[in-house]
Image 1: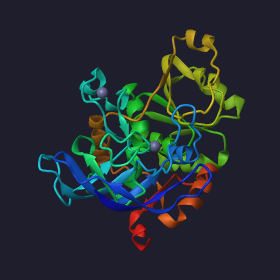
Image 2: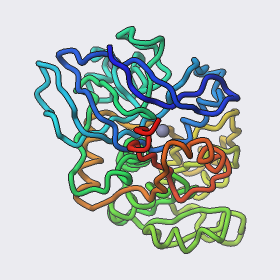
Image 3: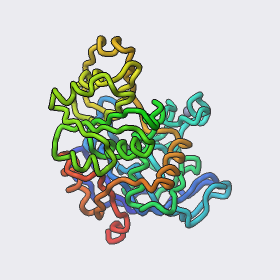
Image 4: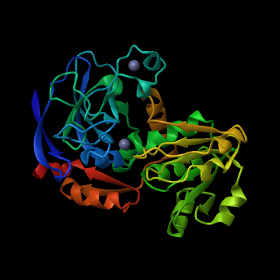
Length: 353
Ligand SMILES: [Zn+2]
Ligand SMILES: [Zn+2]
């Protein structure tokens, strides 16, 4: 084992603070990565503050972070895909059972035995749970390491590993391409990536937002139209016309309003995790044979496909880069949705700790 610098939270109410954590020495299949950037996902905040205690209670101390970009420092003897110096990334998963039907279908994100990048039981026994990317290094099985196209801005590439794949995968799954009409609900970390992808796929892209203030930005990001969801006339104008709507909002909201925007056989796919159950009118789904779906990140192969697509189209997240010493301030701002559109930690700032 060796020690890594990191930031961790000791309880749901304490701020994140500098610490040192154990990392395993690379086994034959492992890649040791020097972390350069790590995005701040809203689920980092939710888990640090134990907001999902009924579904996945947080084990403290927690080291969050699953939007990791870095450089390979060392590889195990059996590693074939990577060598020291390569630009690589790690997302929300660091292991799975490799044997279940989902793993065999390259859908590790649906494996019942997946290991999340942080706060999952650590199979290697290095620590009680896995520790994430708010750290200067991480050691990961090569199967769960992704290659980063070298033309991408690295800070902007980090959020692709969660916000990017979370919006890319359901748009692909529901067949978004040229000529389709796609709605994106919410213009935050996930939503702004959804707009970029839907636009790059050639779809007619419409952003639903509660505030007129976001209109200009939505158009800049690639939207063809913007609908202010509070405006009943505007909503009525588009009713029954969407092939796919990607709903990225994690706050409690009215799903029926978006079901009613769908064309026959259209799909409303949810990617925001709401804390409490949300009612849906069955009539809205029966009429027009509409689908209500969910989605969770993506498999490893699809995540690589997404990164390669981003390399080809030069797509990255819009980020505000911060030193790790500003992470608690960033959390407070994130809780108020005060960021355009993702915080990303420059891990070089950890050196002075
Ligand atoms: Zn995330
Ligand atoms: Zn599996």
